[in-house]
Amino acid sequence: MAGSSSPSGSTNPTSLGALIDALRCLPGVGPKSAQRMAFHLLQRDQDGATRLAEAMRLAIERTRNCASCNTFTELDICEICASPKRDRSLLCVVESPSDMLMMEQTQTYRGLYFVLMGKLSPLDGIGPRDINIDRLVERARDGLVREVILATNFTVEGEATAHYISELFAEQGIQVTRIARGLPVGGELEYVDSNTLAQALIDRRTVD
Amino acid sequence: MAGSSSPSGSTNPTSLGALIDALRCLPGVGPKSAQRMAFHLLQRDQDGATRLAEAMRLAIERTRNCASCNTFTELDICEICASPKRDRSLLCVVESPSDMLMMEQTQTYRGLYFVLMGKLSPLDGIGPRDINIDRLVERARDGLVREVILATNFTVEGEATAHYISELFAEQGIQVTRIARGLPVGGELEYVDSNTLAQALIDRRTVD
Image: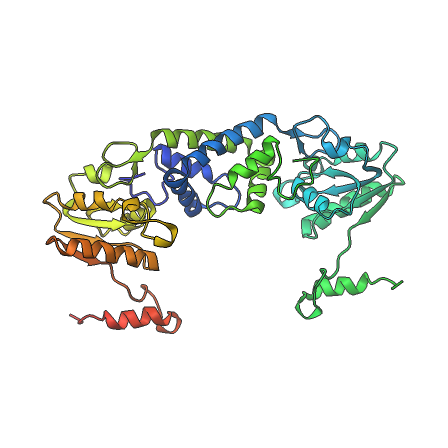
């Protein structure tokens, strides 16, 4: 790095330049952040960097996809899928393992999951095959699943993915539901966007 | 990760949990970003992660501090310090290697540098010794340096550091200057903060 006047170190053949380049594989990390991270690691936390390098190597070596729900695990079948306490008649479809974690944190869902590891996105060339739809169909046909709960994001891609899956299962006698849209808990009408409010009105329910 | 309901994976003994923890050594990366980064690396860019781990190992192994200016380099003396084209009578003091890169990008400075690798920050327990002030004094006494240019940041700590260094050199017959404060190039009075405008007024100069 030192001695070069290259803007970001990106064309730099030194090990520091290579580190700055390599850090850019992290999501949301541009040239400036990568440079800041590299300097921080070398200047203040070489032990942390060594631990991180080893952790990456180990995680890649050991982590695989659960044969049942497709999430990351070190086992053939992840702990949730293997647990006898879960309700096998419910199958919740999420886009990513982090969404699955979020669902678990609600502590209100006791069924099983299927993790797509993506979402339909024709513009990016991501079709049904890339998000393991075949495996989902096969999974839902195990004879135990009675309801598929679609918990993909309420983005354009997430909605398209949910729509695609619901069409697919409509023919097969498996009930398909979608998690609710509406105002957030603690939300005020004054501060919510009008699309959300409109949806909350459309999906209004009888007070019991 | 999978099968656990721990909020962020931080207490998780799996290799994925360990990776999420280890990623938090990067500056500006909290539990959510670390989780997102780990999932991204495993899901979409295992090659990038492998390259990054190797780049970190190499950079730590090879990078050291320049014996003259203290910046990161793979050599004993960095290329800038070793260059015969640089003006040895000017010594610019900066806080970090990235600041040095910024100075180089201006393409208007042809002198040498000294990188403090930090700034005075009594509240964080960072004193003159921690930012290599002894080495700076020794460096400035080489008989060639005639002017020390203070280019630390205009933050509270950067200003305190500049003040401390200027006091130190005042007794030694070495001229000390500070880079200018004022409006940015293209700046408009209407949109600049009043402290900057006040300083621009105080530091006004004769039009030639």
